Image (tube, rainbow, N blue to C red; front, side, top):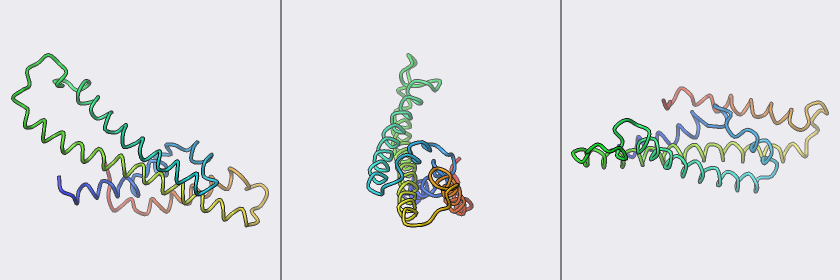
Length: 156
């Protein structure tokens, strides 16, 4: 795998397939912790770390235990050693690429929301739209903005 394709995976995870704005994953913590930029940056870093680490662990579990013919089965698969080594290297690069990209994309979205919510503190938002209502409207507009990147790259 080339560095270019790894970079494409990272950028696609941040913009095209943003886990928050395209799949609405992590919405509760996004709404609860997007009031202050400092909190948003900290939580964004935590989500980036967790998605990266769990992506690697899940990949190992899936291919080590769940897939038919996995190395943890009693079959003798030593003749596949070099292929497995190459696959592990390629998977590690892709897994970290998506894990980091997904976390950074989520972090970008929450930091942008925190900045907007702080600015709204100085604005006169109509009473019916204050709180969660305006936050959901802004989240929808942000999702539309991120969807503008959708035609560039897609992860399947």
